[in-house]
Image: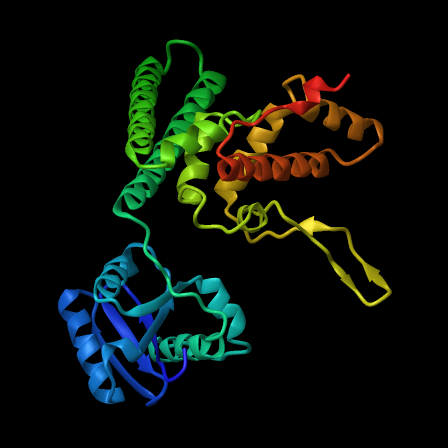
Length: 331
């Protein structure tokens, strides 16, 4: 990234606050296609360079930064979307807050991390749709859970017949949500089957014990068909199941444990997969029982099984062969 002009952008719903680090210059444009064109024009004129010399960096703010990412990608301009927490942790002690200072902090972050930052490559339109479908599924699940909890409260707190109308209404809503959830799952599965290379891996990872269709959908979409993460260890870290050492000097020797910074949704699903795996006769169940007999912590054992499941899903996707439980061939 030699001779690059580093530019930090603080993205909001309506406005982009821009800071050109090389020129110590701040300006604002609208967060729309007209503003994006103006952004390039001002940056090139102020820094006396072409668009190929620009390097943009900004936080991944979801829908607010999506149009900007598409514009930069189509224009062939290098940019990086980075997690907001990463920028915050790297800023050190700060006092006060403003959009201008935030844009400057992002530009400084890009300059300091220039040897480590990887340019963002946007996923395909199909992956974007699949992610939105997963988001919609999660929303409907939350609504269904809320109605089920309310229905349980009605059954616990009132006599039969007192709240029949409210019960019937919520039962109808739950039934309708069940139908819509099945429709979303069918749509996701249909899309995966039509995408080149996706259906093969989708079927392969389901040969791993404990992995069903729903978990397979999430794994395929979050790993973008096993192209987003270079190894199962990177994915385990992202999902929050990778153990890390906690020690300092010779006096502090903490237990190895997972970090709270994680994709909680994936972590929860992998936990369900591990709990399902230990109910199936075979190596996972025997491993869990053996660790129990040794007095090991149950959650620690489940986390080991979660990591085993992730490693084996990545392995079958890499080998392009179904998982074979060699444990059953042991005499």
